Image (cartoon, rainbow, N blue to C red; front, side, top):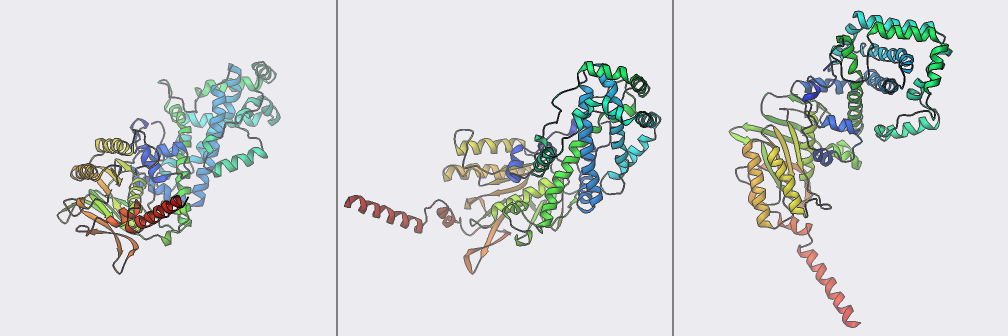
Length: 515
């Protein structure tokens, strides 16, 4: 890596996505994140990267000036990247020469702003110090001054003429274009914005003519390129012959994705804070444990539910605590009691913590997970020819990939088959996860799976009123019933439903007989 990253302490080759795409689909749904932000979120942080990320997000959420600087840099980098694209696609040498000076000026303006970062939160101060020192090195310092001198020496009107092709890349049309962009950005679809280009590109003949008419500038720019060694600050791979200063500028535009990731996720958590959801920064634990106190499900905010209206629950998992292995749980209980919400709360906490993001809870501590897996069966589309087959394919994939440092949740997996097979397959999956040391939860209505070797959680109901759900999840020795009534109600097979269907059928038969 040729530049200090805001997000990583490792090279790009080591940033392989580990969380499956299905995990983010299950947990985040239609949360507005750009594709590249989602891809970064799929890469778990290493232990030393988590507090670094947490510091950046904390500063994004509490320091408006820092947040504004990140947003400003993102815009400057995006515009410079477009201009760099024009430079890279130049059809003739004269066009490259004429574009080089303004391109370098923009890149140095970006580096100057990077050099202003300071503070102990995250890695911002370290990065600011790096770029400040970089600007003081002989080659960058000379190139920086030469770019300033060249642009100051020649009349702005002339520069406007000779850089017509520059305008085709980075200038935006005002009015309707600005309104269109604002709406698109508010919707989180910035990646869908096409690079704006004027209807006509400056032709090679015109470029050569401009170079000839303003030959003094052209010759000075050529000299600048020769003196600077032709920095290539637009993300191409560094050449073996490059100086260290040149290699640093090669990765400058890689900051765009990092800044967009920070702004996307900061906007998401800022919206949660505005809806009174608690935010905390769990500590990285050197023990094999996942302890989150007072956790709530942030996805409930999409239904307009404020954080103060959500019942908090604790998530207490450890490889061994008090002589018990508590890494994986069976969760059962009445329908509508909060089981799926608890499952999603735990999985989102694991995902966000591993990404260095805040977690919607009062506090906690956790080991870093190498992957988060989810299994939420779909009732609408089946890729493998049926619900049970589809569930089996997805579950087997998790069984194959999840290890002792992974986190996995399953929501009524294998419910699309008969009771005997459902129990057989569910027992195999849960026991494999538990004995392998994988952290997670298995939600089920199968009574025989509860109260055994695998610790059991239950959705608590009001003892005085069995129909009132408390939405609290607690550890129990087992469950007193298989909650058959809830299952029957779910599929319309309880007594009331059957009586209603029977009455409707008799009424229908009488009507047909009368006819």
